Length: 104
Image (cartoon, rainbow, N blue to C red; front, side, top):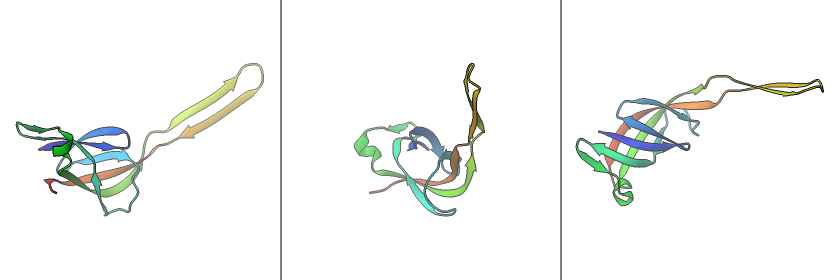
C-alpha cells in the first residue's frame, strides 16, 4: 500500500516506514504531522476520487532537519566593475511515514 501526498508544492510517493525529504515543516523533532493525500493505491484498488481520498489520512513523524546542496549565484555587469556573489541552501525536513489509514 502506498499513497501520493502533497508537500510544499511537490508530490511524493510514500509507503509505511519510508523516510522522505520534504520542504521545511513547522514542528519539533518527534512531533507528528498529517500529510494531505492525493491518491491511495492498495494492491489493485486505486482510490483517486476527492471524496474518497479525503477519508484517508497519512501520518508522519518529523525525524530531523537537513539542507539541500549549495547553489552559487553570480551577478556580473560588463565594463562597470560590478560583481556580486551569493549562495543559497534550501532547508528541508525529513519525515518518517507512520501509517496510511482510512479514517473519518
